[in-house]
Length: 211
Ligand code: ATP
Image (cartoon, rainbow, N blue to C red; front, side, top):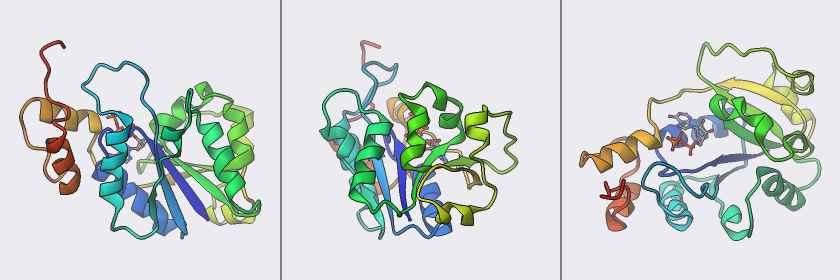
Protein backbone atom coordinates (compact mmCIF):
# COMPACT_ATOMS: atom_id res chain seq x y z
CA UNK A 1 0.00 0.00 0.00
CA UNK A 2 1.10 3.50 -0.83
CA UNK A 3 -0.14 6.65 0.92
CA UNK A 4 -0.58 10.28 -0.03
CA UNK A 5 -0.66 13.09 2.54
CA UNK A 6 -1.28 16.51 1.05
CA UNK A 7 -1.16 19.91 2.67
CA UNK A 8 0.14 23.42 2.39
CA UNK A 9 2.90 22.64 4.90
CA UNK A 10 3.39 26.33 5.57
CA UNK A 11 5.40 25.25 7.53
CA UNK A 12 5.37 21.50 8.13
CA UNK A 13 5.12 20.75 11.88
CA UNK A 14 4.92 17.89 14.35
CA UNK A 15 1.10 17.75 14.02
CA UNK A 16 1.56 16.68 10.40
CA UNK A 17 4.61 14.51 11.02
CA UNK A 18 3.21 12.60 13.98
CA UNK A 19 -0.06 11.71 12.21
CA UNK A 20 1.87 10.81 9.07
CA UNK A 21 4.02 8.37 11.03
CA UNK A 22 1.01 6.94 12.83
CA UNK A 23 -0.86 6.17 9.62
CA UNK A 24 2.26 4.84 7.94
CA UNK A 25 2.66 2.30 10.74
CA UNK A 26 -1.03 1.58 11.14
CA UNK A 27 -1.58 0.76 7.46
CA UNK A 28 1.87 -0.77 6.91
CA UNK A 29 2.54 1.66 4.06
CA UNK A 30 5.55 0.94 1.87
CA UNK A 31 5.79 4.64 1.14
CA UNK A 32 4.01 7.84 2.10
CA UNK A 33 4.12 10.70 -0.40
CA UNK A 34 3.91 14.07 1.36
CA UNK A 35 2.81 16.49 -1.32
CA UNK A 36 2.85 20.25 -0.79
CA UNK A 37 0.20 22.06 -2.80
CA UNK A 38 0.57 25.45 -4.33
CA UNK A 39 -1.04 28.19 -2.34
CA UNK A 40 -4.09 30.11 -3.37
CA UNK A 41 -2.90 33.49 -4.61
CA UNK A 42 -3.75 35.51 -1.49
CA UNK A 43 -4.16 34.58 2.10
CA UNK A 44 -4.10 36.84 5.10
CA UNK A 45 -0.73 35.74 6.48
CA UNK A 46 2.89 36.18 5.52
CA UNK A 47 3.61 33.25 3.25
CA UNK A 48 6.46 31.06 2.14
CA UNK A 49 6.62 30.27 -1.54
CA UNK A 50 6.11 26.74 -2.74
CA UNK A 51 9.79 26.05 -3.27
CA UNK A 52 10.68 26.96 0.31
CA UNK A 53 7.73 25.00 1.73
CA UNK A 54 9.06 22.06 -0.26
CA UNK A 55 12.58 22.56 1.14
CA UNK A 56 11.25 22.65 4.69
CA UNK A 57 9.27 19.46 4.12
CA UNK A 58 12.25 17.70 2.54
CA UNK A 59 14.44 18.70 5.50
CA UNK A 60 11.83 17.48 7.98
CA UNK A 61 11.49 13.97 6.51
CA UNK A 62 15.04 13.42 5.19
CA UNK A 63 15.88 10.81 7.83
CA UNK A 64 12.52 9.06 7.99
CA UNK A 65 12.42 5.84 6.00
CA UNK A 66 9.36 5.52 3.80
CA UNK A 67 8.55 9.25 3.85
CA UNK A 68 8.90 10.87 0.46
CA UNK A 69 8.70 14.64 -0.01
CA UNK A 70 7.04 14.73 -3.41
CA UNK A 71 7.34 17.89 -5.53
CA UNK A 72 5.00 16.87 -8.33
CA UNK A 73 2.40 19.58 -7.69
CA UNK A 74 5.06 22.27 -7.95
CA UNK A 75 6.10 21.05 -11.35
CA UNK A 76 2.74 21.22 -13.05
CA UNK A 77 1.56 24.42 -14.67
CA UNK A 78 -1.91 25.72 -14.02
CA UNK A 79 -4.04 24.90 -11.00
CA UNK A 80 -2.86 21.84 -9.09
CA UNK A 81 -5.90 19.70 -8.54
CA UNK A 82 -5.62 16.64 -6.30
CA UNK A 83 -7.48 14.55 -8.86
CA UNK A 84 -4.71 15.19 -11.44
CA UNK A 85 -2.01 14.41 -8.88
CA UNK A 86 -3.65 11.12 -8.01
CA UNK A 87 -4.26 10.16 -11.64
CA UNK A 88 -0.56 10.71 -12.30
CA UNK A 89 0.51 8.70 -9.26
CA UNK A 90 -1.87 5.91 -10.19
CA UNK A 91 -0.25 5.64 -13.62
CA UNK A 92 3.08 5.00 -11.88
CA UNK A 93 1.70 2.11 -9.80
CA UNK A 94 0.37 -1.30 -10.63
CA UNK A 95 -3.39 -1.11 -11.04
CA UNK A 96 -3.79 -3.56 -8.13
CA UNK A 97 -1.79 -1.52 -5.58
CA UNK A 98 -4.07 0.13 -3.02
CA UNK A 99 -3.45 3.87 -2.88
CA UNK A 100 -4.63 5.72 0.23
CA UNK A 101 -5.30 9.45 0.40
CA UNK A 102 -5.14 10.81 3.96
CA UNK A 103 -7.04 13.96 4.78
CA UNK A 104 -8.05 15.62 8.03
CA UNK A 105 -11.70 15.79 9.03
CA UNK A 106 -11.54 19.56 8.40
CA UNK A 107 -10.48 19.02 4.78
CA UNK A 108 -13.05 16.23 4.38
CA UNK A 109 -15.82 18.66 5.34
CA UNK A 110 -15.02 20.62 2.14
CA UNK A 111 -14.42 17.61 -0.11
CA UNK A 112 -17.44 18.24 -2.31
CA UNK A 113 -15.93 21.54 -3.41
CA UNK A 114 -12.77 19.87 -4.76
CA UNK A 115 -12.38 19.77 -8.52
CA UNK A 116 -14.00 16.56 -9.86
CA UNK A 117 -14.10 15.17 -6.33
CA UNK A 118 -16.07 12.06 -7.26
CA UNK A 119 -13.30 10.98 -9.63
CA UNK A 120 -10.85 10.76 -6.70
CA UNK A 121 -12.33 7.35 -5.94
CA UNK A 122 -11.19 5.96 -9.29
CA UNK A 123 -7.65 6.34 -8.00
CA UNK A 124 -7.63 6.10 -4.19
CA UNK A 125 -9.27 5.00 -1.02
CA UNK A 126 -9.96 8.00 1.19
CA UNK A 127 -8.84 7.82 4.82
CA UNK A 128 -10.31 10.61 6.93
CA UNK A 129 -8.11 11.25 9.96
CA UNK A 130 -10.30 12.12 12.93
CA UNK A 131 -9.81 13.08 16.52
CA UNK A 132 -10.90 10.43 19.01
CA UNK A 133 -14.63 10.80 19.71
CA UNK A 134 -15.34 12.40 16.31
CA UNK A 135 -19.01 12.04 15.35
CA UNK A 136 -19.66 12.09 11.65
CA UNK A 137 -22.78 13.66 10.30
CA UNK A 138 -24.92 12.17 7.54
CA UNK A 139 -23.03 11.67 4.27
CA UNK A 140 -24.29 11.91 0.70
CA UNK A 141 -25.12 8.45 -0.68
CA UNK A 142 -22.13 8.57 -3.05
CA UNK A 143 -19.83 8.61 -0.01
CA UNK A 144 -21.95 6.62 2.42
CA UNK A 145 -22.01 3.56 0.20
CA UNK A 146 -18.21 3.56 0.14
CA UNK A 147 -17.68 3.65 3.91
CA UNK A 148 -15.98 0.63 5.46
CA UNK A 149 -15.32 0.15 9.17
CA UNK A 150 -12.47 -2.31 8.90
CA UNK A 151 -9.12 -1.13 7.58
CA UNK A 152 -8.42 -4.63 6.25
CA UNK A 153 -11.02 -3.94 3.55
CA UNK A 154 -8.73 -1.32 2.06
CA UNK A 155 -6.30 -4.03 0.98
CA UNK A 156 -8.91 -5.98 -0.99
CA UNK A 157 -9.38 -3.27 -3.64
CA UNK A 158 -7.06 -0.68 -5.17
CA UNK A 159 -9.40 2.31 -4.70
CA UNK A 160 -12.95 3.46 -4.04
CA UNK A 161 -13.56 3.13 -0.29
CA UNK A 162 -13.78 5.55 2.63
CA UNK A 163 -12.49 4.86 6.14
CA UNK A 164 -12.63 7.09 9.22
CA UNK A 165 -9.47 6.63 11.23
CA UNK A 166 -8.87 8.18 14.66
CA UNK A 167 -5.34 9.55 15.05
CA UNK A 168 -3.51 11.54 17.71
CA UNK A 169 -4.07 15.16 16.78
CA UNK A 170 -1.48 17.35 18.49
CA UNK A 171 -2.71 20.86 19.18
CA UNK A 172 -0.30 22.43 16.68
CA UNK A 173 -1.27 24.50 13.67
CA UNK A 174 0.82 26.20 11.02
CA UNK A 175 -1.27 29.34 11.46
CA UNK A 176 -0.31 29.50 15.14
CA UNK A 177 3.37 28.90 14.33
CA UNK A 178 3.34 31.78 11.83
CA UNK A 179 1.69 33.99 14.45
CA UNK A 180 4.29 33.11 17.09
CA UNK A 181 7.14 33.94 14.73
CA UNK A 182 5.52 37.19 13.63
CA UNK A 183 5.21 38.10 17.32
CA UNK A 184 8.92 37.43 17.86
CA UNK A 185 8.34 34.30 19.94
CA UNK A 186 10.05 30.94 19.59
CA UNK A 187 8.34 28.07 17.74
CA UNK A 188 10.83 25.55 19.15
CA UNK A 189 9.42 22.06 19.97
CA UNK A 190 6.43 22.56 17.65
CA UNK A 191 8.39 21.63 14.54
CA UNK A 192 11.78 20.17 13.66
CA UNK A 193 14.88 22.28 14.36
CA UNK A 194 15.95 21.91 10.73
CA UNK A 195 12.71 23.55 9.64
CA UNK A 196 13.23 26.35 12.16
CA UNK A 197 16.74 26.87 10.75
CA UNK A 198 15.29 27.30 7.24
CA UNK A 199 12.64 29.70 8.55
CA UNK A 200 15.41 31.81 10.10
CA UNK A 201 17.61 31.59 7.03
CA UNK A 202 14.84 32.81 4.74
CA UNK A 203 13.35 35.15 7.36
CA UNK A 204 9.92 33.68 6.86
CA UNK A 205 6.70 34.73 8.58
CA UNK A 206 8.12 37.96 9.97
CA UNK A 207 5.58 40.64 10.70
CA UNK A 208 5.54 43.08 7.81
CA UNK A 209 4.54 46.70 7.94
CA UNK A 210 2.08 46.47 5.02
CA UNK A 211 -0.34 44.12 6.82
P1 ATP B 1 -2.91 26.13 8.51
O1 ATP B 1 -2.87 26.44 9.98
O2 ATP B 1 -2.04 27.02 7.67
O3 ATP B 1 -4.32 25.98 7.96
P2 ATP B 1 -2.34 23.31 9.04
O4 ATP B 1 -1.35 23.22 10.14
O5 ATP B 1 -3.77 22.99 9.34
O6 ATP B 1 -2.19 24.71 8.32
P3 ATP B 1 -2.16 22.02 6.40
O7 ATP B 1 -0.86 21.95 5.71
O8 ATP B 1 -3.20 22.87 5.83
O9 ATP B 1 -1.76 22.37 7.92
O10 ATP B 1 -2.74 20.57 6.68
C1 ATP B 1 -2.44 19.41 5.97
C2 ATP B 1 -3.15 18.26 6.60
O11 ATP B 1 -2.65 18.04 7.91
C3 ATP B 1 -4.67 18.45 6.74
O12 ATP B 1 -5.30 17.25 6.33
C4 ATP B 1 -4.87 18.70 8.22
O13 ATP B 1 -6.10 18.17 8.65
C5 ATP B 1 -3.71 17.94 8.84
N1 ATP B 1 -3.25 18.54 10.09
C6 ATP B 1 -2.89 19.82 10.29
N2 ATP B 1 -2.52 20.04 11.57
C7 ATP B 1 -2.64 18.86 12.21
C8 ATP B 1 -2.43 18.44 13.58
N3 ATP B 1 -2.01 19.26 14.53
N4 ATP B 1 -2.68 17.14 13.86
C9 ATP B 1 -3.10 16.30 12.90
N5 ATP B 1 -3.32 16.63 11.62
C10 ATP B 1 -3.10 17.89 11.26
